Image (cartoon, rainbow, N blue to C red; front, side):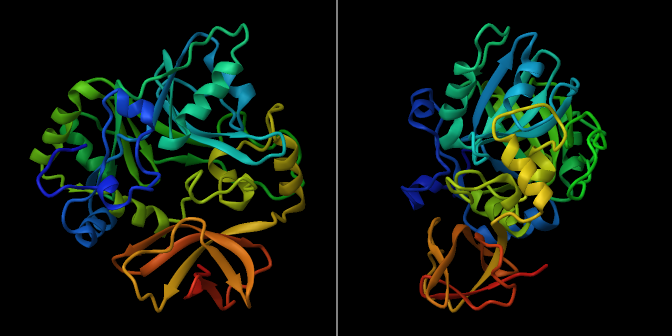
Length: 370
């Protein structure tokens, strides 16, 4: 954790939070991260209007070296990775045979190793799957969480803050437009559906431009020095609460929190970032193709505005969303936003109208149609 006076850990606030390291990571010396540094609303405003540094070192990190790593990962996941070049990044999914989301990972390639960072509670499952699928491939996936930590510069001024670390010129994400149903094979380029610019850091590790700012993967021994260098240049710190509020407002779903065991990529906006619609076979591809061609996923991700809240505690993940007494979905992440009030991401049935009068527990909720 970024050791700064006033930091309150997420663990101290909510013992059941999923935003903490797995037990194996604790044994390796990976501690909890800060929920906030004394003023969560101010920290949110900083991330939304300027730039702030968020400690996300609880995320799992998997290193995949080996000369066959790209073609191997290409065959196992939803993304077109065979053409990923050094100093590029993207996203990928591991799907079940029925096309349900099992794993989501962010990717960065440095020319020698492919780095995957994923949700804290999902690292072991992803690594176990990769190890089982090695067979005779020349790859060597390993858990690198104890050695490397993820920090995030979040906000519209994130790339400018990188000047302090000697990194300039990070390009904005390059996203391939998702084609309409029944597009002809070969229309999509043979490259990842989204490409993130990645550059090496002088202290080791790399910087990756993403939608909310810039992710920094740094060796843990130099993490404190990187933090102090950025703070010395005027970059304030912000806690995980602020990061989650910005993420929810941007309608970015988290696997394992805003998804359930039935979630397919088209329901939660992962087709445009983590799925290539015109590549070779991978597990779950049939469901992806069928749903895309029909254009009718059974559920959709919605941003809810919660009204009449009588408690400071947002609804827990998994709380049912009801309409006229019938369950029509579930809440994922619920947060207090500095401008929007209490909001939540929810997965609801596709036929639920935008003007439906919903309930989340005893709280009235309305869908944001934007």
